[in-house]
Image (cartoon, rainbow, N blue to C red; front, top):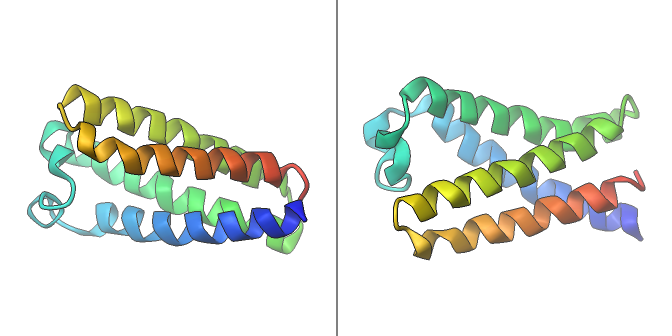
Length: 121
């Protein structure tokens, strides 16, 4: 049962982070600004790095357990996403964007659950 729960969580997180990370990697600051107002507060290189980590983490959630090579990397990816959301919530709160923190909390809970259920994979 935990394996099924893991795969549901992993796929949801993978889709989200491939989308969000892909946008951060490929779009200009002007294109990102309407949905990510914080991009002006960080160097573009850091935004791109966050995007790359999100894409790599998304791959790390599904590829290792799928092919059976180092499946514990999936747990590490999930823990990384949980830590990323703590940092993102901190950034939003420092900018006075309390209304945006709900998504960080949801993603934090999903990532923590993926890390826990991933121990069964």
